[in-house]
Image 1 (spheres, rainbow, N blue to C red):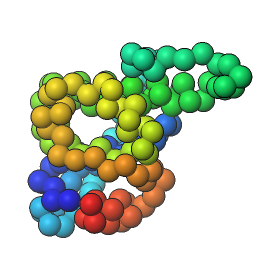
Image 2: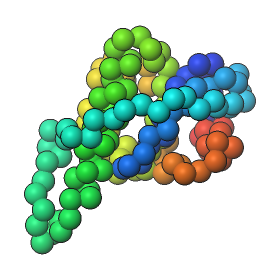
Image 3: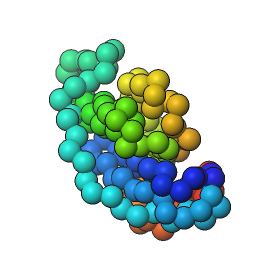
Image 4: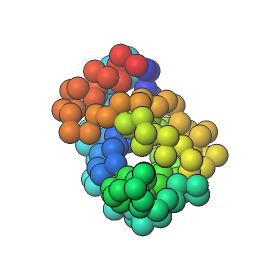
Length: 134
């Protein structure tokens, strides 16, 4: 994947978000970690609410969905205020699906790409390689 300089890379799973800024050129990915962002995981996207039941015995999936919605809300906010002008989202497939429900049209306009892999907990070098290969 060719990334413009200063592209923000959001790497998320159901519990953790790591943000990077691309400092390399279009052909060579070089990521710099950014400060952690506070995520409001109390909101679920429409259609994502479900109750615990025999078919869904715990609330962990609901918590992960809430976190995904919170990450999306934070990214939307930064896109709308002009802080993010170029974005790539890397997330586990289910998390990515949950996040897509809440994408603002302005976020879609700056979204360069998505990578449906769970890379949280991986080294920066591993994330760089995955982005270069995509």
